[in-house]
Length: 238
Image (cartoon, rainbow, N blue to C red):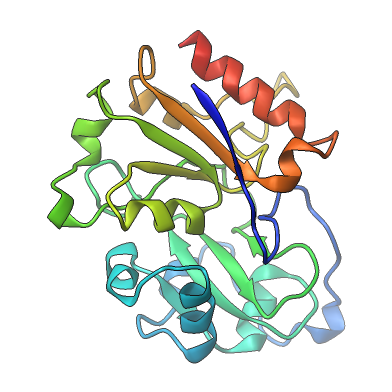
């Protein structure tokens, strides 16, 4: 297993910790907790979402494969994210190994134009998951095969967009929503201890080359480095 430092000139991904508040006075629309966030987005990305992806090296040909959607109504975005500000949303859906969307329509939303944390949000009371970045068909690499083929190296990176940047060039990459987001939020009702996500069980890790690539600050911030060390021990043990 190798460590890699991913310098990000823009901003770090959300580390999963709740920050900031949301003024009820500014909430104009109520989004039911039963509504799929993905259903609120539009397939055609607006300029803000397109510019965000382009600036991070994600090519337009990949956008459709990744099934990105845009939420352009800022009032709807605020009702979804419950965060003050003027921003639109980029919806990033998560996939199963067979390339289809998760049956629960799980997504995370990048708050485009938001200058302060948090910059990523997901629906309330939803679990963390691993993001298996889709790989273009021309590379003939299927996640169902990769998961069991120990000769295939895997990159585990901080953030879905960084995983996409690798996957669009054929590299198998798994994104985590933040340095601690590879853990469950709570193990069970009788314990406060977090445990590795069940998604790790979808992949055979023992004997595989795995590269961990996180934002540059993850290696120097005291609160973040233990997350990387703990994840490395987990994968090393497997």
